[in-house]
Amino acid sequence: MTTVQITLNKMVESENFSFLIDLDQEEHHQKFVYDLYAAGQCYEADTTNFLLRACKPGDFVIDVGANVGLFTIMMSKMV
Image (cartoon, rainbow, N blue to C red):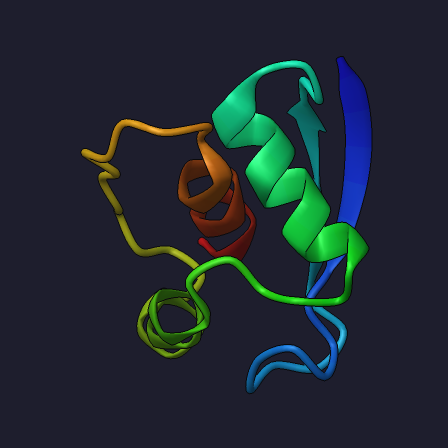
C-alpha cells in the first residue's frame, strides 16, 4: 500500500486542492489511478471538475460508486 499525495493544480479547474489516498500498486484498478496521477493526468477530469464546483463546506454527500474510494476521499475534503 502506498500513500499518494494527489494535487489537482493545473489538472482541473481548481487551484491548490490536494488530498492523500492509499493505493495498492499491485491491484489493477488502484494501479491505474496511481499511474494516471503519477503521469500528471486526472482520473475522470469531468467528474472531478463537477464535484469541485458542486460540493461546498457543510454539504452532505454520498458516494455510491464501487472503485478505490477516490471520489469519497476527495468529497470528504471538500465538505
